Image (cartoon, rainbow, N blue to C red; front, side, top):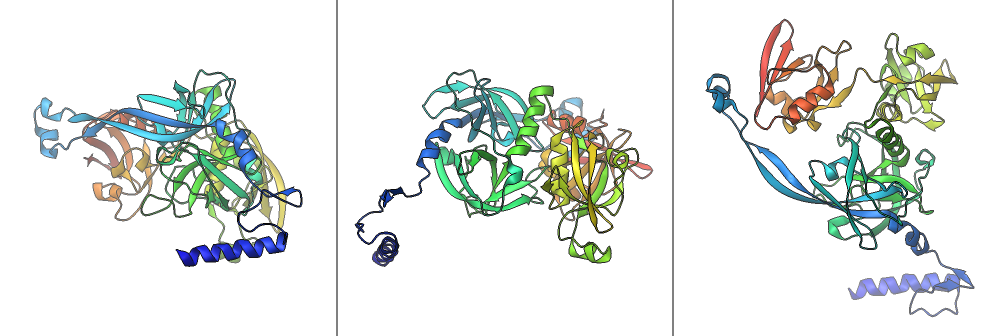
Length: 451
């Protein structure tokens, strides 16, 4: 400890000598030669009232196993759902985005299954919140409280962020309300983390811990640049790798929830992948990043705009596109009916193309959001809404172990017909016991049991 203190004193001493030799070395001065030293305090005094603590309580259904033999051949009572309710409490954070309406945004996972949501303001006032709407795939929830004299955070344009920009996280980690940590933007457009269905994260090294979810990530002007959502760490604690939903993405989703009561995803109607060195070399593409298009769906928004297979989408509304998942997330969260400008690389040149997004009639979703035993399966609704296709399945995943295979078409849930992703999700959510999927595999019909 003595060695560390000596080293710290030496650093402070050398810094003070460089700035002003006459300053006392006992403590860091507030000002040097009339110039104040940098501090976040003035900004935080304005911003922290716009960040809230969230407490939730409720009861979750705990499913009990039923013998497959009893389910198929036992009496009706044995086939009834076997479950019990287990009380739970949770903590999280939220951000006031509209003071007049009392709108508070947080993560869906913070309030999921909650029967009661209590919001505590910085000044200690408490309010029970009303849930306005959620987007489970993007992990966003919109709440509302009836309160006066609220402080809302101003939204920054997250598309203008750069790696290296300073970032400040404010939230309620471990119940320690209005905890502030700082860092930088470590990366942009992070995806492929299997955290959410639509991933386009800001990565930051500002400390984010349990309870920070739903809190604010702001810039040095005190403007909201992101909603803190997840961390990457084996112990569940901070290791300097945190992820936030960009403010622009959040705003697009919240605007749709307010207007429609739900999120209506936009769709280009393309299939593709992230441009890599192999594709670039094979196709003689002089680019290092972008979304490579290998298929355009007939009669889609992309087809109408003249986008072709082999094109590389490099920007959307002048914001760079780094990967295909990033493009997918931006398009989906913008919503149907929105017109965007895409930067298209073709034949060595980049040109601008206007595209009006259509509704996402062929929706896709990571199945682990519906049930943990379906983890590893990517589902996609058929174009004619006759079922849900298992588009991809990871080897040795829970979904593979229950017996699902790539190409399977899910037609029923416990003998109830399902035709869309949403119907499948609702049907599974309504079941407290074992789940039996009616699946079409080639010319055969089979049953897949999920316990």
